[in-house]
Image (cartoon, rainbow, N blue to C red; front, top):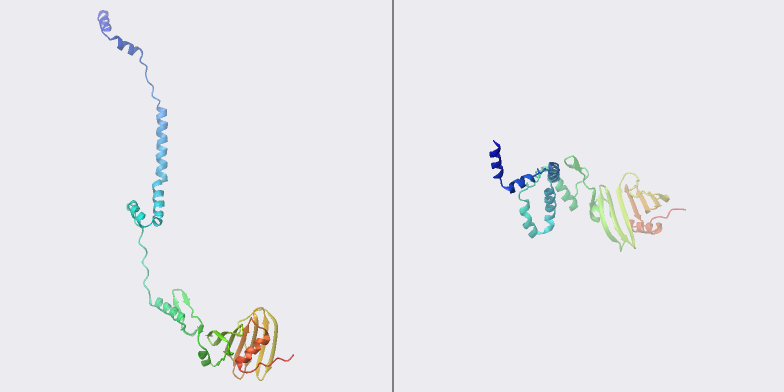
Length: 262
């Protein structure tokens, strides 16, 4: 390009364009700042994905459904339609013949018709159902065992029962509670069931009957064994003294208990 044509070209350019070109400067972009913002945004997203806040909200809302009542629960039921339903409960095992046998034994026990200890013990799995040896009965049932018991006049029968071959009668008399026991046996033995610390004891015999009276922390026990009857008897109470206890035993026997010699 020659000098004349350059001058013509230069003179044809707008003065405003020349001023704008003279004042132009390059804008620098701060990429470090944008990179830091992007890193922070990614960290926030990763934290939200790891925390699962919507699951916490779902569980807490689900736990609150039973307390909301029927109307509230119906309103919020749509919230839980998209989640998996709970697993179905495991089916119950079918009852076997041994199950019915054990259930029948329990019903018999509640009705008072408990099988004897000689009967076979019914089992369920690895555990055994042991029959209850205590059987409530009447004084007539005890009389059939060979113990004709006549309680003192004015006494109140509380209960009577048998424990295998042992007869037991509890009654109230003269404001005191008594427990009378009797059992057929070939020799004298302790059938009172009271095994406390003995503070005082006395033994004596009269007319073929051996007597024993002992006093402990649980009350007083009077025992007598009749070799003629081959029967052991005992009368226990914690509410009276030895003299009253012996008097009550005499009324039951139908004869006065001999007083031991000093």
